[in-house]
Amino acid sequence: MGRPIHFEIHAGRPERAQAFYSGLFGWTFTKWGDQSYWLIKTGDGAPGIDGGLVERRGAAPTAGQPVSSFVCTINVDDLEEAMKRGQSLGGAVALPRMAVPGVGWLGYLTDPEGNIFGLMQTDPQAR
Image 1: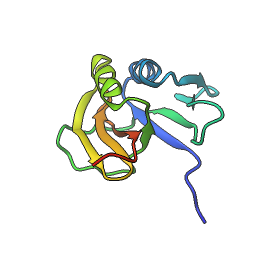
Image 2 (image 1 turned 30 degrees about the vertical axis):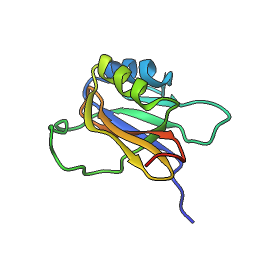
Image 3 (image 1 turned 60 degrees about the vertical axis):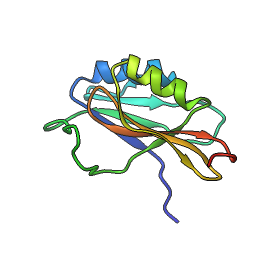
Image 4 (image 1 turned 120 degrees about the vertical axis):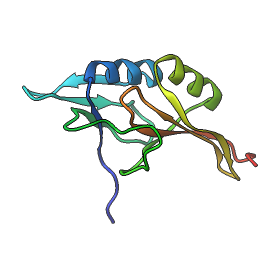
């Protein structure tokens, strides 16, 4: 069975994207070789995958454009706090908090580069 093992974030301004994700999630970035590519370490011990940041080739997504790629969702302890912190770091709300009954609370942000991603706070009581 195929399972996700790596993700990539595309950015026109990689330094800005690194500052955003480091500030929001504490992720670390390590330059890989001579390319415009950085390895992303998302944490240790808990389930999850690591990824990469690559310099975007082409135009950034525009606001309101349909999603045209896989959307990654990141587990957070406090959805409201993470949404506020993401906005303070230059992100924008793509879809506000909503209940996923029996699972938790879900919201979507765009990063300063226009990429959309999800945030999930686990809560089996969500309705």
